[in-house]
Image (cartoon, rainbow, N blue to C red):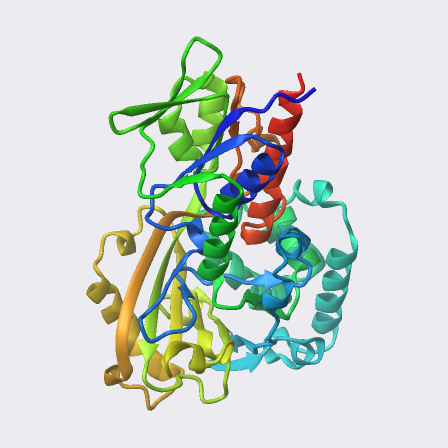
Length: 437
């Protein structure tokens, strides 16, 4: 028989909110602690006074195959608020960009060459979409597997720029093939968003949780999670200590290691051994459209000499009407955690980016820019090594009552709101199961 518990959730991203939802529905008393002054985590956003929608700090999408987040939205009764525009994604080849958002466009892409290369590209794509045997794929690196089966030209023109862009030179040759499988196996060309933006979704979700009795403390930084000796866990926030029967941390692995130093040494070392890339994203509000062709997502190889990986014109995906006529542009990159961009100020980074925008539109001028925003996180993209499944931390931490759910544990799947929802709910169900013991 289940006895209802007093439970804390650390982190108000979609993983933490989803866990709180299931824990509260089961009759538990749930408190959520969030260091930021808003909910939403890495999918949170901001809104100018003359905008109707928010803009995500780090661009986010829902794929049509994202059954966990779409299922949650359906449970909450908001399915009509999910929109699926179909924007145009382009690939770079020899100074030009080519649409790459359908099979016909992929076959026309000149970077693949002709004949056998396009056949190998197609066969590899079909195989990865059909196979479910990712366990075998994690035994090989992307670099080795793709060179063997897709061939050097296909790999070097198509996949290697993505791998180098995502993981840098340090990790590009050691990322395992299961990561690539996960990206190609389930993702769709049609990209979804939530009416009003992901921040609007997060705010609505938080309001629903409050209606269910969940307490959400914002702007509240956790200093320590420890055992009390009476079978409970203590969370220290400033001068206060709060006591709980169960605690779920949805932080980064490194932060959990700092918050809970009493974890067993092998679990701690497992957390600290996990590698991840950071992300730096600049958002620009422009007075004019940058892409005359209406392109949404530009995939840019580092070898092309651009100081960023992606350029994304958000208002070629959702209308400028939602943003008071502003044209919203993302410029982003995945970077090592010690990269200089984490220390440069906004103006210094903008100065590096601006000269390259005329390559997308020769008419671009700096006076097109109305406003800029800079967002950075050192925990954005976990790095999956060969046989990475053995490195995944258990959700049950081995401190009784302390649980951990993060994007480092959704492997072989890639990070994102869909798998944040999945692992948050999976952790909640484990916690509920353990209440039965």
